Every structure is written in C-alpha cells, then in structure tokens.
Image (tube, rainbow, N blue to C red; front, side, top):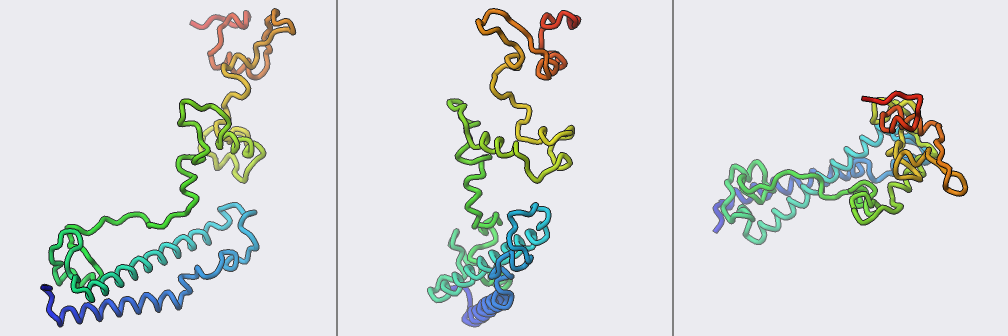
Length: 242
C-alpha cells in the first residue's frame, strides 16, 4: 500500500505532466537547441574541414553545449515517463534499489525521482559518446602496437608520423615542449632514431669489403659527442671526460 495519499499522488502527477509539457515545448521551439540544422548552415561555411579548429572554436563550443542541453532534456523526459508508468503500476514512491518509501518532501522537490537520497545514483558523464572515442583510446586505438612487447612493426603511430612530416596547421608556439624552434621538432617523437638502433650506427661506416672502419663526422656524430655519450677515442682531438 502506498504511503502517499490520493491528493499527493494527484498533485505529483500534475507536476510531472507539466514538466513533460514544458520540456517538449522548449525542444519544439528551439529546434532541439538548433541541432536540427547542420553546423555549416549556422556558420555559413561550405565545409569546416579546411579550417583550423581555432577558427570555429566559438561555434564548436556552442554546438557542444547544445548537445549537452539536449541530452539533459532527453534524460529528464525518460525519467518523467518512467515515473508516470510507475504511478500507473502502483509502484511510484518506492525506491527501486532499497524498496523503501521515498519521503513525500523529496518527491515534491523531484517528482521524477525513483530513488531515496541514500541510494540516488551518482552523476556521471553523458551516456552517449562519439563512436570515434572507441578508436582514440589508447592513442591510435587498435592500430597502436606500443603497449605490446611482442610487436615492433609498423603501426598507426608510424603512419601518423609519416603524414605529420608533411606538415600540419600547428606552429612551434602551439607545441607542448618548451624548446621547440623548428617545425620538424614538433612531430611525435621527433628525436626518434630512424633506420638504426644505436645512435653510433648512423655515423660509423666501413668500405665495400667491410674492413676499413671510418667515422662520418656529420650532425649525428657531433650530437652524439656533445651529449657526452661517445667514447673520447672516437675523436683524438677531444679530451677524455673525467
């Protein structure tokens, strides 16, 4: 038997129906917060692909806010419909977790609630997420082999590095590092060795017979020595470091 009187139930039903009508009216008049129109219609751009994200930052922020508002209203409508159905079934006003009666004071403040205060679910992130996130976490998603000890082949990160080497819309001022002075230094793992494993392999060479050893004193060699990684015997003119 419900702990709510018929008058209380009638008042709560009226409140729920009024909330439901208000939300539907708001969604109808706002065109679902403007989401019925494409973003390009709002900005006047034929395409956003050729623009830097910063050029459409305001529009993108407003779009994200509209999506959040729409999700909130849709979620609230679902709660209202569930509460009205519970009234018809005679289970309204009872916590669906503990089975305890929900105080009338709480129902008067939140007519659509199905929980007591102690068992109310915690607020969480929106339950609908972009499908792309399934491939973006971890970085490069299913194509990333960095976390696998048994793989060292070409993966999604390597593919991006090749594409990125042709340039992107970022500048050194937007880079994560503090000492970025070149566009080439902005690439992911820009200092990663390519074509060799040990740094010295990039400047140690032999003749065609593989016998005569020589040192190619180029940039790689100088960087190797300046970083104090090389043996001083590679260069007799340098003093041994203590």
